[in-house]
Image 1: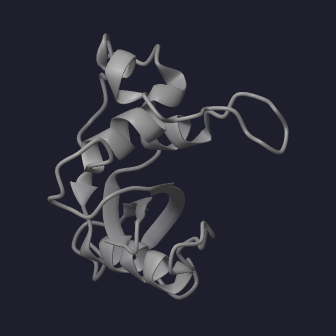
Image 2 (image 1 turned 90 degrees about the horizontal axis):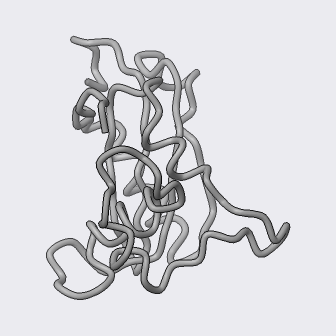
Length: 139
């Protein structure tokens, strides 16, 4: 995709897990509080339904990450041919507006973020993205 790899962040993973645990199956965004976490400089978040880590099947994490989120913009470099099968079962139309939804793919392919952390609970995945100062507590 021509992007630098995202580094794993324990702080973002912990927050993502907290979001889906609190949601208990509902899709409610809760962005990292920058005032409470000064080492995090900016954030983005994506949510999607999916199976638990390690579960095989059509809704495993790769299917969520690629098919559910990245394939919103199937023209992204590196996705050649992936969306033909990975997007099965996903809708990229916002039910409220009837317009194409691309925000998840835009967040995940943004050069603005350097770190990622994901969590799963009760049928829901959350990934938080951010910029975190190296050497800080959230790194």
